[in-house]
Length: 204
Image 1 (cartoon, one colour):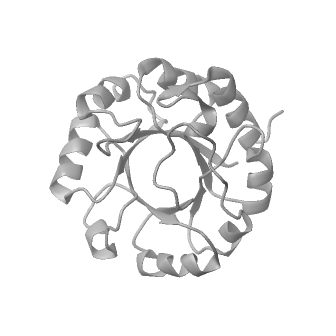
Image 2: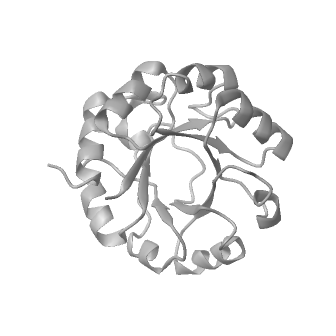
């Protein structure tokens, strides 16, 4: 069964809603000046309340490795997700599982995955836009995920209305959603969270 990560968690209520709905992982964004950025202290207070089999993932963008490690230690992160231009040799030094984001506009972009192959735990396939301010995002071509090497996490433009079809076409290891289940930037819509997870995992 596909795994589900609810990203852009900023508060306790949204975290617990996601957990109760069946999320396998929660994403905490530590990228400054972005709509859903949280401080390490804010994230730590939420992560301490998570059940043992829900994975807290820290999202970073070209941060120094010392900073990433300090945040991971403070918060109790159990996986790291990198969205910037981090080179493969930098990512192998982390002890936690690493997810590398690859922004995909077409098949040619999959080539950029090759230097990271066997060096990361999974790839997250995202669209070219940097961040959503709450507006809908265009999905990537889901069939590209079938061509990609390694363990694939599908992101970008996913919603409760299209995630079941995306999973059936892309056959990813996991799906990742942020703005697609929001009432507004940084605030989740409980109904959308529940419907997204149920449909991603094959429910009604």
